[in-house]
Image (tube, rainbow, N blue to C red; front, side, top):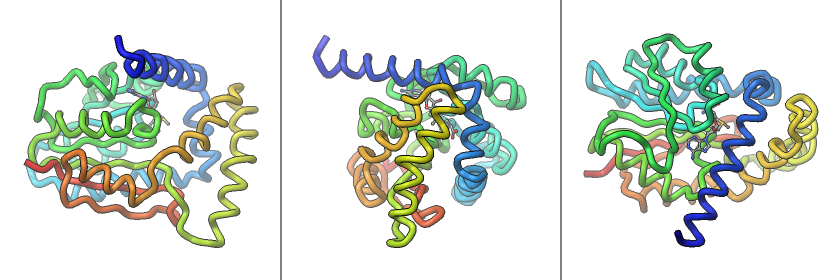
Length: 238
Ligand SMILES: C[S@@+](CC[C@H](N)C(=O)[O-])C[C@H]1O[C@@H](n2cnc3c(N)ncnc32)[C@H](O)[C@@H]1O
């Protein structure tokens, strides 16, 4: 096994264990720390995808679904069939208690998904891509399981574009949020990991370029809440 492969396995293990530790408090903290804005971001993903999907019985895969909030939003707002996957069992267990039985929950690693090439009309990943050992590897794997012309939606924290918002958000995200998240979840490391992983993640433009490089066209993004988050859409090229 190469050094890169063993580093990727070690990274995945750390991330899985971290989400396993905070799973029970994840939803409460998400809504509290974002002032509930995260809900409107997920609704935006569903609305934008609904407008792209033309087939009557479209099939969407929600990757790194966590506790299932986006899977549920997609199910309720798009009319599509939804499958959801994550590699952290405690997160999936919470999802199982929230989503209807029509949403299939499947344990799987986003870098090696247990689906055949060209299975899905659309694939979503919300606040998941940043956690993968390789962002580029993740995008390629998501492309693989999409049908040609299928749509990928990536919702992720990004770089605030507003010069006034930027320093205030930075103070909140780097100092206040880790403290509050750490105290409430009982895992300080998980909530210091959050801003650290966002700072290493490509910004809006870089992510759009990476999507094009990995085989997506019609790539476009929308800043959400002044660029605190961004929603990228891209179509699998042939
Ligand atoms: C921040 S949570 C986001 C959950 C959900 N999508 C949401 O919007 O709330 C990140 C999720 O990504 C999952 N994850 C991280 N790396 C993964 C991987 N390699 N394969 C599958 N899931 C992964 C974690 O287990 C966790 O549930």
